Length: 416
Image 1 (cartoon, rainbow, N blue to C red):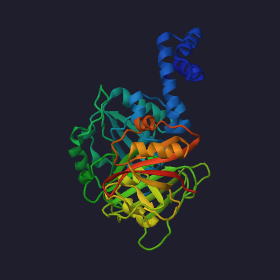
Image 2 (spheres, rainbow, N blue to C red; image 1 turned 30 degrees about the horizontal axis):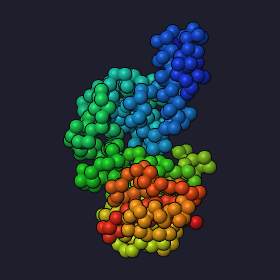
Image 3 (spheres, one colour; image 1 turned 180 degrees about the horizontal axis):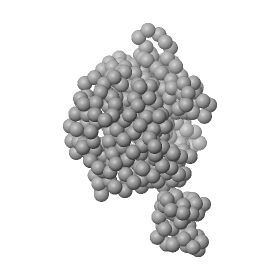
Image 4 (cartoon, helix red, strand yellow; image 1 turned 135 degrees about the vertical axis):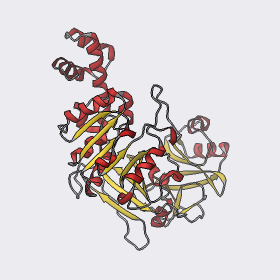
């Protein structure tokens, strides 16, 4: 793909990618592209098209594999991580298990020298090609080898993204000791290199978080995408929830005892640019418990990063909200307060769950479209939707939950 013939094939493939694959292949072959090269170019062009959501315009010159793209860090997340390392004064970093190089490239763009290690030969070659395509080959060196053998005394900081899928099958690995490199090696890094950053699965057991480390959960557009452990001098708060979304920031009230909110703007400046995603951060110890009370006029559905970071109590304090069940992360308040950390709905009805009663009430309200949210309920939303036999022209939101341990359904509308 990096030869003159390959570049021409990629250019031709980019013009026909995204449509019918058979027609695209036929178009390339009719243009004189050999069948094997045409298939490879079309695969790469399709991966680049899909990668635009993670990498933006940079995806147009990058090289991907399907597993590598799936596991690669989104550019906006990698950039923020790189800026934090630069702000800490880091000038050299080892990226152990670099994959296709998404994080290595983001760090290098901040002027940090990167020594990347990748066990898979093809993936290592693609990472080096991506560094060259980005004009960062002088700052990024990729070696194919065992990450555990890298001499970490050569660098000031280490970033490690252990493989959490089995080679060949792609199945997820849930036992940290089966990661590659394994968890005991990662925890050993924390003792050897003060500036250690580890990308982990969002479902990480809090019991595995090393003492003194900061655990950060990141969501982008409402999707929980990853968690990061910041160790040594990089740790600022025990727990952090970072929410990346479009739109203006919503800051804290600033009252004493309220949660700590932060806003970070564009990648190139401290002030936000108009086309940059808004970044909101909620921090706290992650050990507080929110008060419990009755269902109130408004229900808040916290962002998954807030829930996973165990910062629901901090959010509850800022919203003057309570839980209706100590085990369910829905918050209830008398007022609708704008916040980037939760979605707010107005509760119109609270019912002990009964399919028959719910069906009758929705028919009386002429509800024909429902959004179904759930926490603490075993009901399958799509099956419930069919069982409701909806007919009408009005929308509603149904929240399936528990209140004081009892199965409950809330009928809601968007908060004004």
